[in-house]
Length: 196
Image (tube, rainbow, N blue to C red; front, top):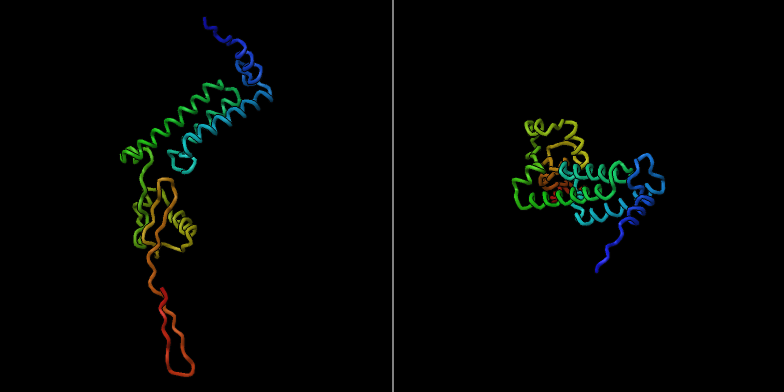
C-alpha cells in the first residue's frame, strides 16, 4: 500500500521560511529576502525559457509584458499575492507572449495588429509631414533622431522609417563622388581627382 506524503510539514516549512499565509505586513525581512531569491531564480528561468524575446526589443508589445511581469513577481516578493500562484501567473504571461510572438511571426496580419507597422517618415530627402502627424512626431523629434545618426537634416537621406519599437532607422542616400582639385605651381596644369 502506498503512503502519501504528509503535506502538513511542507505547509509548516513554507509558513516558517516564506511567511505563507501571513499578511504582507507580518512577513519578516528574512522571509521576504528568501521570497526575493526564489522569485529572482524562477523569473530568470522563465525569461531564459522565453529566449530573451521581450528583453531584446522595446516595442509596446514587449514592454507591456515586462511591466506586467515585474508587477506580478513583485507582489510575490512582498506577499500581497501568494508566491506560487504569482509565479504561475508570470509563467503563463511569458508563455502567452511567446505564443503571440509565434503567431505574429507566422501570420503577418496578427503581427501588424499586436506590434504595429514601420512608418515611412523621410523619402529621398523629403519629410512626409502627413506621416509625421500620424506618428505624433515633431520636427524637433525628427532632427534629434537624425543627429543621433550623425546627420544634420533630411537632405541626404534615401529613407527614414519610424520602426515598430519607436526608433528611427535611417538609410543614407548614396553620395556622389568627391572632387579634389590641386593646382600645380610650376606649370599651368590643374590636377582633378575624383574620390568615391
